[in-house]
Length: 282
Image (cartoon, rainbow, N blue to C red; front, side, top):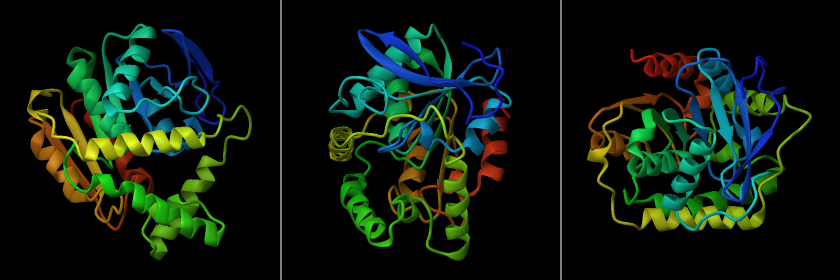
């Protein structure tokens, strides 16, 4: 499907059957080249993608964002491993008829993107991996505890946990968080189904298992990769992103200042041009 809609808040939600499972997805942009497939973060659904980033990249490329198995409006249950999430993403991409894609993976989505590139290297042209690290890189298994603490703080302050997980508690960080949530709230109709508790628990278990697993041989991934993070990420330390970039033979590392896990959202006016230039091979 190709759409002429230019706004993420208005693009329709579509479904496709993949091996008996109905997947929900949205497409934006009318580019005829290699599409960019977005893989979202822990506990996220389609409505959690920042419109500033989606629309910025869709101005140059066809963008596809989807709920993986068991997430949001997509049927079934969350797979027990990140590898299986990658297999599901591959099946979804192929069901749409694509033989080559660019991948944009944020946080958990970055881990899924790595699995796609390892399992189906012929499918991947370029990758952007934001706020993520390598499997077995150390410390990633702590995400469940960090997330739980953030949710307690959110409950006590009647706010969203991403205020504490994605943005530093500085004046600049708090302003960036306010703007981020304002952009997320722009879509008021045809919103995605909220993620279920079972899916949240399943994702956390898969992340913990990945954190405790042996590292992958990322040297076999030859596609160009842009690795990004904030310099004060409490979920996936920027040192893990730097480690990820070192393990990839064709990677570029970009660390955004005074920002956290949501550094690409806080610095979207810089990140979008960086991403577009990278996808163009510049």
